[in-house]
Image: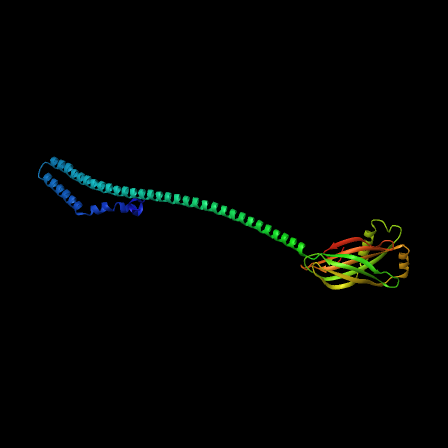
Length: 319
């Protein structure tokens, strides 16, 4: 911005008047003063050429002020011209400043428009990114659901395969080979593997209990005897570390390792007492799970050996 359009006070005001002072110091102004001085001298000489004091005074009173007025008018005209030029320059500077301000405003408008466009693009990008993230989350959820479904299908397939392929043992052809007072009770049975894989570490356990009384033939006698066996938990291992291949069987002869008491035998022989036999087979399948099967059979003189209860499970001890 030009200094000529600043505050008219102080140094700036003095700078606005500088062209006037420069003009005053020029030769033109000196020539004007010289002309004025010549005219004053001429008027004075003219006034003193007459002897009439009144005329002389009139010439001096009219001529000298006229010359001074002329000089003052010329000076005022020169100053007015210089002031007009100064004002023109100030107006030109103001016009330039106004034009620069307008250009700056236009540039600011363009910048604002550009920023609005960038903001719109950023907003669109944010919305697109949010939609992409939402789609990614949906894809991740769907992938997880598919993975879970695949895992469940694999587990089901594994369970189905395992259930179809594992070993299944069953005890059949059971009979009492020896039931004599003073001798161990000896049994014989056949253990068959009806599954598709071997049964490992086959162990056989035996536990017996004598039941007597008027309610021996009630339907729940087997359940009550089973609870008694569970409570006493006196299983005797009679056979161990045996392998039974799929589709094969093993004939086992074993005893309870305890001589039969004569009094117990007499009660049994007189149809007063029933001897219940619990046989438990524990084995490990191809997966490494330990399983068991239990049969509870009644041995009475009038009916021989009859099965009263059969159970299976996947723990070592049935509870």
